[in-house]
Length: 617
Image 1 (cartoon, rainbow, N blue to C red):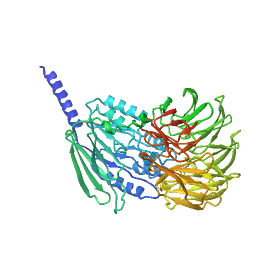
Image 2: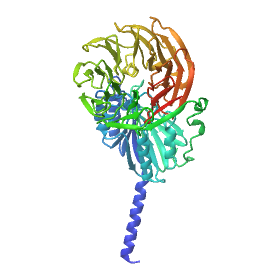
Image 3: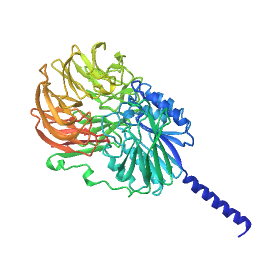
Image 4: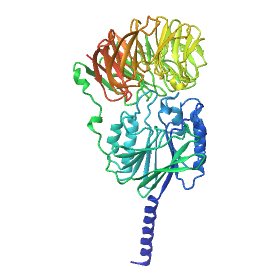
């Protein structure tokens, strides 16, 4: 070997040794989680203190932020959090949590506009970090990983290769707290997943998710303590070490040292943990007649007329399906996601989109009639009544718009929170809840305020904002996250009665003739009450064994049959007069939006995974 070739060989060996050492170097990073920035919390102050402490640390590579950046993603909360985080002197990588996507006046869109994405992927040393969110978007539900994000995750894992050590960053733990967790396990089990870092539980803890170490980081909030804190993590020699840092004091408590190579690998999901479809065998007469797969997350409820189904999704498409076959007849693409149900009347089709526009189409000619632009995203359900479109928005304004030409008739400009509900037109009033703690009643003729109502808990998180209010015999019926079913006087806004015997949450319905109102409890039970009485007057209650359920899927009656869906894909039909079970059918494991019955035996449904179908006798 010549002297030159010897030098080249030594140089190559040196470079390879350097690369090997750099790949196996110690990686130090901080984890912020559940910062809950809001005017009603200490979140902003606690986050500032955490950032200050991190900036004083030496040899820190980056910071991870694992969701719930805000208490409610409204107003300037997210912008305040970003200003604080941007003062970090090291790079940071961030994903949203359920508080940022569910309680959001933009359904999470402003998060993506501020940080360009709600996912991340990067390499540090020999590790690849992949972060992605689990929602849920807008609806109260278990966590849910959108199909597009599962595809993105699989593509990034394949790009990394089977041997590349990967650390996943999530908000939720990878358990049934995420409705499609088992799909995620099936994707990642072929790869070298070393650990999952997440938040949501506000405390430091170690768990195992099908054999994968799950490291939960504490919240930066101080809670009942004088100061908050954050997590400090080190990756070295194939091990991870985790400490809690108390902000303001410099106190450090090491609570975990874990050999990441000591695991047994990712275990398959046990059959007993998979969705159980045995209920479908009990009612063989109930069939799935047709199924349309839009491919994108769907939080909108279907709307029908005599021949068509109208359903929007987050791709911005309003799909028009044949009611008999489920085949798509045509679609219209808005400039933003569609999160709410449409409204149809005569030859008019009206729907709202996150492009801040109320769209009105000709129902039979597929052509645009008019658009009305608002000042922020539109997540609310519009209602058409006597030639007028009534709709809330996320800009603090409730509007009445002429159906024929799209001209504004009146507007009420003092709504303090965003609106997602469908308004009730009742006794010359339009009634709706907002995420500001209040139920509003406006006079129908001019939009002036008739009254506002709120429950005993003042926090906006307990707003009567997700249920679709119903009314009869001078009373408005609502259910809110405070677990109460309430009757409110439509003329005065005064509480008539409140009841929480069954722990209700955000679901109410009413019979076709208005003599009975319905509500679902958070566990198994549905009740019917008389709307005539000035007292809480129970007509019937039944246990339908649907389990724990928090989904705002309203009970809907048609021709004597009451229908509703749940967060885990169960659709139930019961006799509206006595509550006796008629049949149940389970479709997948995902949230069923408020259903649309078309007869006593058939119902159109949509689920959050993007499917719309017709089931029944």
